[in-house]
Length: 216
Image (cartoon, rainbow, N blue to C red):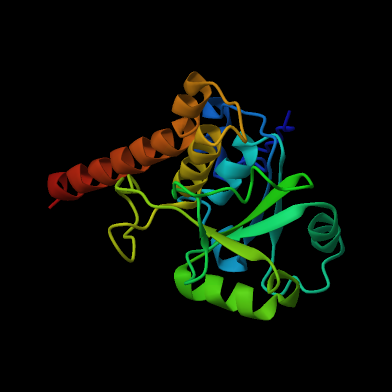
């Protein structure tokens, strides 16, 4: 269980302003797979629309690290050594989680860890380039017809999903491969804090527009 801590101005659990804390909507699930979120410093500063912290909170078996070059990061290197580790990144040679011939996870000899980069595409490339300890890890990808519900943030392409949406897609696919055994109800509730965050931000935008028109 994640520990919650807030002061009057900021929640240091979801890292949002205290007035729009999303912790009460987080539904934590436990996975066999360890998820490691590598957050770019620029994402860490996005207190109003970041989903990396929400993803970390929703996954009991997860860790989050902020930085760019993780080459000599002690904890990350220990994870790579201990786990059969992968990076979620749609490179040319990535293993497709949606493929009917997928068997990488089902035949893994060690517990599995998936590194998820929480960043823009450009910054993700830099993290992968600078972090030499990630170079030997296989990449994972997936196919999805879903469109991102991140209505308050423009995605670089229609097929791009936010960190929390991508993570849900991965978990659902691992469920299909019987690597995970997560109840459907838990999967359905995974995006609750994300959806509430979107609702809150849209309401704020609508309120600002109304006030602007009223005082013209």
